[in-house]
Amino acid sequence: MDTSAAVKPALIIAVIDDDKGMRDAIVEILELDGYAGRGFASAASFLAIEPLDPCDCIISILRMPGIDGVGLQRRLNLAGSRIPIVFVSSYDRERTRLRALDAGAISVLRKPVSAAELTDAVHLALGIGARILYDDSPGMAGADIKLV
Image (cartoon, rainbow, N blue to C red; front, side):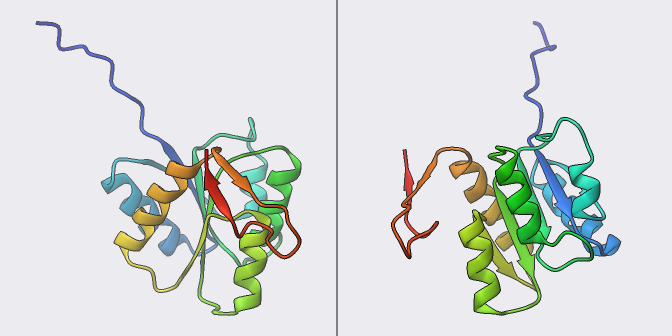
């Protein structure tokens, strides 16, 4: 019996958080769920890697020094990236959440976030991935998501 069957590589999730302890905890949660987690201390350090699409999903905090989460999303959009992003924030401002969703984020989770909430959001993001269409009608930017 051949026991060398091909093992499907784990999906790669980039975790961008300037708090090393939080970043490492999220990576550990993802790895326990079967993903390969890669931590980055800033959006700039993530954007500096080549190729630009080194992962299947991104989990990022919204507010961080340098390029913030929405700025990261916009740069990825301009580069033609379709990597789904899940944001995590300790700030509960509706305007900020809507800005992130309008920029294309899959979801915005409020800290403290449980392991289940985090992995559910990643599952949702990977389930939608590059298969979404946005209704571009005025006032509906990113609000009407349709699976195709």
